[in-house]
Amino acid sequence: MRVILATDHFRHCPESEFTRGQLLEPFERPARVESILRALEGAGYGPPEPPRSFGLAPILRVHDAAYVRFLEAAYPEWAALGRRSDAVPIAWAIRGLRSDRVPVSLDGRLSYYSFDGSSPFTAGTWQAVRSSADTALTGAAALASGDARAVFSLCRPPGHHAAVDYFGGYCYLNNAAIAAQYLIDHGARRVAILDVDYHHGNGTQSIYYRRSDVLFVSIHANPAIDYPYFLGYADETGEGAGAGCNLNLPLDHGADWPRWGAALDTACVAISKFGADALVVSLGLDTFRGDPISSFALESADYLKLGTRIARLGMPTLLALEGGYAIAELGTNVVNVLSGFEAG
Image (tube, rainbow, N blue to C red):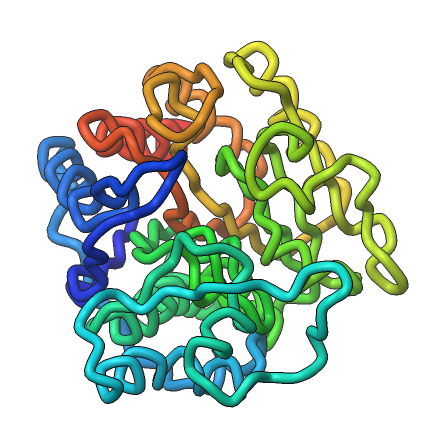
């Protein structure tokens, strides 16, 4: 299996994360990739390939142009104000407030284009975000050209919480959605996206919710009790042309392989019926029992079964990294998915 990685991911290195009333070292940090690289090397995988540069055109097929310009300029504007800390939003337009006008000030725009405070901007964030999208696009291009049947795009930062014009949940550009659109633009009639991250891919769902050419299927924590709270319910099945093209499979805390694996079988049956030409997997590994911000109970060995089950779909497959924050075990869990896929 080909592995794609941009070394620019190290440029996104926030100082801290405010969560559960504490300022902590960020859970989403460069050490995640280091763990994966060590495990890949130990398993006999060669050095990852660098991504190609695709420019902004395929990104703008998914994301709003004004939003992309904002992402590019946010930290330079922040620094020009004499601020040297990470750039973070301070307010959100909730019920009863105006959300139809983009504020002029940078603080206002940081708030307007975000849905939470978990995704700061640093001096290198934009370069890392662009390279992460290129990492996914390089994998998609390999599938579209027939150069590969399976690719692991080691994307960082992740992407599945980012929507057309907002960021959050550590995500700025939606790598999986951008890759799926690239596949559609290069000959695929239909594409399926399977999101196996612990947290619902609210951004991916919102991007494709009214589309009939992309099926979005997500297995995730019940949003009534876990992040992102406001999307991911089972009754969200798509609208308009996309009616029936969105399948959410929420599970309660403590889901182990018997429960989670049953949901995976349901997801794979839906994907098979959809008749997609290619599959994009939002590969979150925060379903692991030891993950510090999640509450499922998969064991490392279960990821072998995950990879094998996805391989049985028999489709050109792009696996794009999303979450997974138990850093000591993350590399092992990734390698198990890839090994299971190759054995399947």
